[in-house]
Image (cartoon, rainbow, N blue to C red; front, side):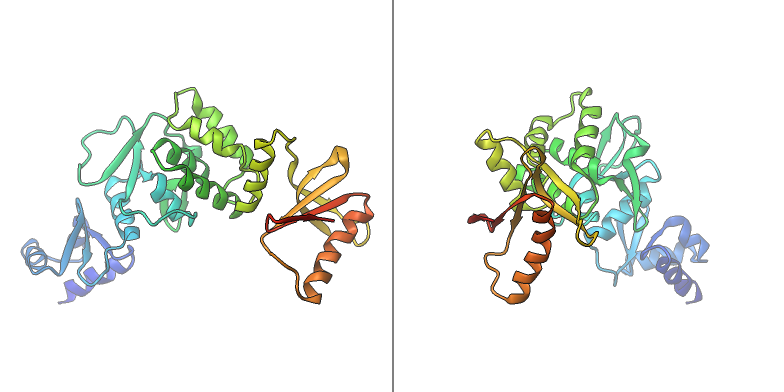
Length: 286
């Protein structure tokens, strides 16, 4: 009984997972361990990794278990990595991993990808889990056959959450492109409109590109001469002293909302800028 409790305590320190050496460390004999497994008290989740029967088998637990088995030269891959970064992607039904191409003798129980570009600059840890950076994750998603919508949503949320930036995505894509990176064509098309930080901003950039209109500077920081406030605007054409703001709101019905808009707009107009607001994509107004 003491050994059983020691094993549970050990699992508590390892996200409810144990390996075979942990069984020995807890003082559980091989015979008793076999009985525990046969009775279903401990369930094998992947090679050499078990969970207690009362621990739900979530995709997060499978991800941790796979990395525990695979060791240091492994990371979460593509959609699995994106979900761990909390990007806007569907929860993974299949947990995927990536390892350096030189690794051999891996189990076929896990979905494992290999890469010749195992670069430590692409590897990070989040909540104790090794995964590819959000930038590399999005690039891998494009190459792994994810739909344009899934990759686009990952780009949008990655930029919005500060996990990556448009220049960083472009730079890393170009660095990897020499190796005939799959999905480059899709990624290039999506990155054309990725400087916006919301779906509406991306739609605005796409509208400009579709009609062969000049591309503005995106997410420009302005400093108010009236009160030294920092104001970030969606788009700017500095050569025309023109600022364009887009908003998902379809109306500004309260005095408080109108005052807030005015406080934001007045310093820009005081600086000699023309401010156009595209509200909900329906109207453009001064």
